[in-house]
Image 1 (cartoon, one colour):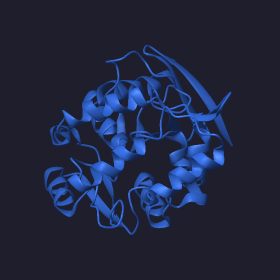
Image 2 (image 1 turned 90 degrees about the vertical axis):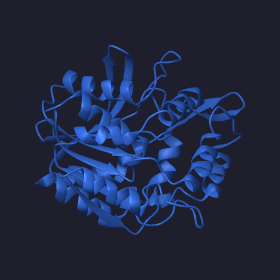
Image 3 (image 1 turned 135 degrees about the vertical axis):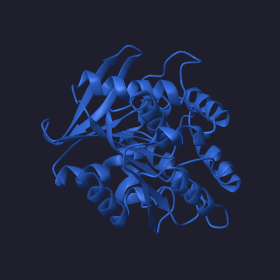
Image 4 (image 1 turned 180 degrees about the horizontal axis):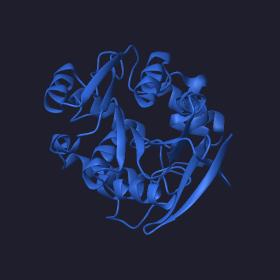
Amino acid sequence: MISDVDLQLSSGRLHALRAGGERSAPVICVPGLSANARSFDAIGAALVADGHQVLALDLRGRGLSPATAPGTHGWRTHAEDVLEAARRLGLGRFDLIGHSMGAFVCMQAAALGEGAIRRLVLIDAAGVPEPAVIPPILAAVQRLDTVYRTREEYCALVQRHGTAVPWDELWKEHYLYDLEETPQGVRPRTSKAAVLEDVVYGSRQDPRELWQHLRMPVLLVRAARPLLPATGFVVGAALRDAFLDAVESAQAVEIDANHYGVMAHPEALRAIVRFLTC
């Protein structure tokens, strides 16, 4: 059973979804740039079935977590939230999974919370993405701060973008979770300003500087299909190889899916469960 958790952190309220026994091995899941906790539904279900406790976060400004003041977003502040959430819940050492920008947040958390993270899973992010994937990522952000007449209209817009697959198995409920009613229709709760602040923050960072802090066992789950046909990869082959050369504790698995599809692909679920069960 999944339960809602509202954590009062020093930065404000942070919402999360919790599943699995509270005495089970804890796993914290950190979503991507404009994603929310529901992006981990498939991974979370697989981990709970294997005996883990899963806490999937709505980062500040996403889903049911309110945005904080301008200038207070970015990988470091999100990482501080992750570590404080773990302390508030008394998790002790825990496993950490991050998808897309969430992977950078997790690497930052590893730098700040040495010894707190037992094992780390980075899902399709390790360094600077290939240039061809940047326009589709930024285009997906434009759906925010807009009112749509119906939920169906909103879902149709997201589906036309072509990246969020498999739709019915994972992403439909993820996008519906983020919607709130307005007098004119529905709109995403996720703050466009918070997301764009994270975009700017990320453009000024070199994720490779965080690699030196990854001393725990690390699994890189790489999407082996382009984000969209004829675009590129969030983790290209050269970046994958450079990461594995630099991080001695890391291993990688290739998944026949794109950047979104990897979050529900059976091979990815099996690889993550195997890695975190060790």
